[in-house]
Image (tube, rainbow over all chains, first blue to last red; front, top):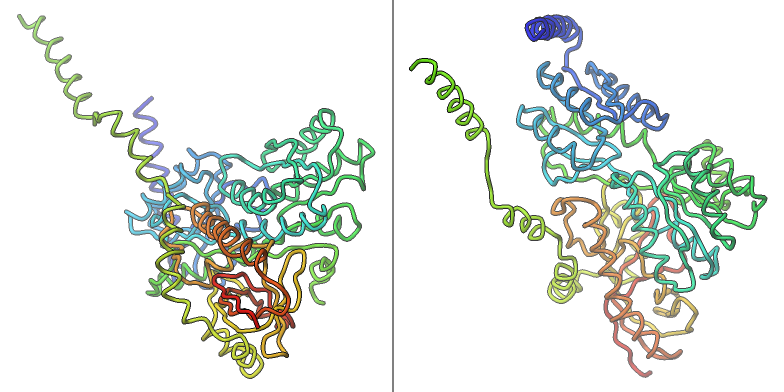
Length: 313
Length: 208
């Protein structure tokens, strides 16, 4: 059995090596691996495809690897990428702590890694990390929230994945504002893993326990739309303000039609493309990268939503 | 004899392999390590607030000069006088000015500078990264994660609220002269606001 496995691994490696040699010959500038946490979520599909597309535009061969939200699979991808001698990795990690070791292995093998959208807890493992400036986004959202709530009322917070730094950066930014207003009271806080259906269920159960809710702040738009669905089913639309984060098209439509109050627009294509550009610059000798490169986000409200629904304007 | 020797040698080999594979360390020292690495935001910000910001306050550009520069050559004004974090159109400026308080509002104090320029000093909405990033004193590469980096702003804003904004709100009266050093943000894709919104860093009040 063991012998069979070894033969299988050797054969696979031989085939991959032959395949990579053949493909490598087609492209002049080398190969870039795009490792994405999961391709089951359209957000990450956009991120991965934008990064790969930009890398190809810059003259590299680009291959997308799907970690399926599984850190073990992510580690396997890094094993293969290192063994196959890729030139750079554009990386959307599965875990802020657990993924550091993979990036360090790539670094020790001389392969630079550029993180996208999700953070790893390390100063120097990656060359840089392109991340939405979640904190600043929710500071702006929090200030708008305070104004819309006229500094008083009961609200609910629905968090994303508790192991993801983005979840806490968004929450911290929001609370750095809202907690300064003592008449704004958080009556419930629960995680729904960035998932629309879970958020709907969470909101349903919270509304049963808390009849007086004036607003809900959700860590992404999918959860905000799920929470709105629960509010609609309970016949409380219009009495509970809904705030999200992401700038998804559905959320923008909801803001334009008065179902949601605000969101924060992120720019995944910009993040992905800039990570490919940075990789190219690094491979061409640039070294002056900050450990992190925050990417600005924009508050979207009924006052400016038309700019994003009709970008040509 | 051989029947005794073989299991003993195998057992010794296994024990040796296991021993060489393990790196045994004191549990207490491992427990202590994360504590030593915890970011002490209060200490970090106290040093910036007390020792480093006073040294850079002279770099603040006079508000009338900044507005002139932005009107004359915005590209150069942004390049020379502002700081920006990452990929962003929002730029942060250290500014200073002398003026007269014209009104006390619920969330701001309005000041007339050289009669023609109006600025609002924030007294309630002191949030975000304006002062941290305008100062240019905090390097993002020094932090293990964004959470710690952002906590610097939260703590800095707390100090400003307690040590600057609240006393200013309590002391200020319309008609008083004020000398102010603060921070403001301007988006380079938008028009320069007609009234700058300034987070106070240092102020002096004078009776006219």
